[in-house]
Image 1 (cartoon, helix red, strand yellow):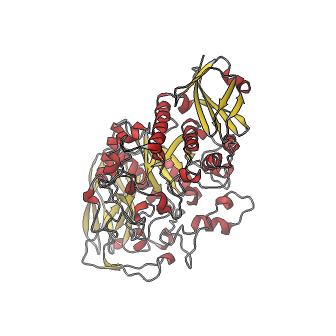
Image 2 (cartoon, one colour):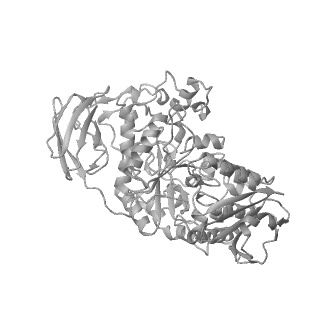
Image 3 (tube, one colour):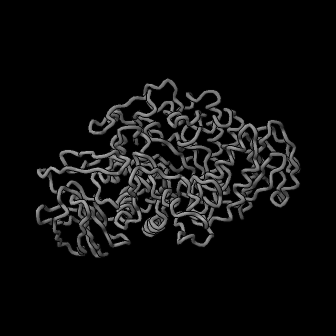
Length: 620
């Protein structure tokens, strides 16, 4: 858990939203409370290391070091005397060991800073690609595997209350691990938990998006060591792990906010100023600087201070932190929350630094914007830089196709939106790196959005498993969990069976009765088929302009494997002329619908029932 500022008390002098906090130091406490990064490694491609040292009055110290292969490049005082920056260069010849950092002056102490050997296991940092299937979950709401960490007395929320949507419920890393087999039975190959780092906030801390310690796993999920073991165990089970991160802001109980290193570590305003939540000014040729500043520098919320990434010291702190997590755990990818809100120059530097160290690392960002062009702006795309910004982000969460699938599945269905969403893929360097999804923790659940219609839900599953990109499902969708996000807690309910006292257990086949079991089995067939058939992972895609609200597309490869997908958004059955698909069906005479096993004896004409998806493997 977090190490609190090295003080006897923290005196608040203004509302959190004003970003004004002072700290009263207790000189009797230790000279150093912490150093970030907490340790480092020899052999990194970037030899430079910036240590942020925190302790009462430590800024007045001088530092000396004698360690073969490590050079002390100097120190830097910050506005707050409780901080000191120590800059090092670690040569390729340096060996693992303990650096004796000698602090002299008013504060005399020696700190043994550890340099570790890099892990050479080739199964680490595998990346996540279109061959994968991601399962997104909220650790606190998925399963409780270790009741002993339900209550951590030193945290601000030191109790659980499953009847409250804002309280902690007790889910943890062990709970996820206990259900690896469940995930694999769906064909899942990658797990995306919402942030597991410490969120020691006094309210709604369960979601994880207000980090209070960049270098600690939340103790109610487990320890740092247990998280590293979790990643290792997932890899042993053929599952990858995606780490959810927040670059733009922190929680207001982070020690870096309570005892700010300097005023320019945060974006400060005379009074609390919220973001305008509109990214369009960033690449608007007629946009105003004020609108850009409000978007990038305004606070996301009153308890989420906005980090000033244009400060190179802050930028280095963040870049090192996210390199640290990859090297420490061997995680496979980063999902970046509120990606466009960060400083554009920082985003370019951050992406480059991580990919320089880990070329295989998957990274995709949340860019919840209104158009394909705007979405593509934040991913690697074919456009020339706008105001110098050229994204190093390989892919994004595809909110455009998300909006399209919702429109296709609603009562007044419009499957043409699916065609339109993919037509804009020419803007991306590689749209197959985008993550496609039907809902998430910030949205109403798809089953409720589409009127709790199982047939249309199956259409959504079929699209998710066969369209281009990396499919991602939100926990519980496979068993028809429902509700509208009014408020968000209603779409973040506990997974039935994740707690010993639960009356329903959807983790077992016996517990998944009725439509929940039907939905699970349907998605499982699709997920396992996709996992076993590369044509749905990396095959080319050809789509035909929808007619009569029926959307047809094909996935195919050079080996002659071809899968036809047909979605009928109408309530009534439709007869589809198959001859218009001749450029993809020539050479094939029949097919098999993979979810039902039904034969498709002819490709010349199709009579597809209403609200139905066909996923047909073509036969010669």
